[in-house]
Length: 327
Image (cartoon, rainbow, N blue to C red):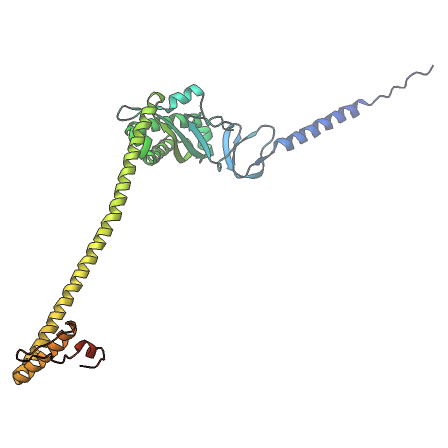
């Protein structure tokens, strides 16, 4: 019966093989832990033994392996936002909105005239200084939420409910942004505020129906005022145009009458001068010219001599004027 052959590896070979395996594993682990990638819209903050070392730009980077260096990648070029009083589903930022019970508390505010209002708003911001963002404040985004709520309550509390809900929205956004930016810089959160936007601003549900009726009445009043102003702007220029037209026509007629009168005066003066030169001749000429204008308008006339018993022949002035023959 054949016995199995036992192959014995020398001790020094086995120890050497294990050594090289350990070396290979260490090298591979070192290569893996010494490389990292920073995305295009981010920056990397490198820590060495927990102490800040440097901030690196996007790309493939190398660091000390085996946990000596640790890297935090922050999206410094991405615009982030926080929502107050409401929540958008599917948000990747866990600090974007608060819990449902907290939302109701966040949006409930009191205005200067002691009216209640429900204000929803958005804060848009960026990470401006990664070093301050990581090391200066324990929870910079949580701090931003508290500071933003405090600022908005202050700004809303300085205005009436009508300003908050209607005409003062833009002014509230601008003032809240300026105040929030000043506080963020004071606390050195490493955050830059881009914009604050008011979303839904409404009175509390129990009085919302009455408030809507008041708004509708005000809108109806504004509409009627605008319509009246439109009619005024239409009728007044038209009336002024008609008045100007009549004034110009009157002035034209007056000028015409004056010119005609001046012409008549000049004609009379010229005739008077001729009359003075030869009164009898001029008087006869004027008489004949007047009869020439009068007779055609009289129609057919029969002229009788007082001493004659026969009808005199009549000169047909109408026919003569029309090219006829006198009889």
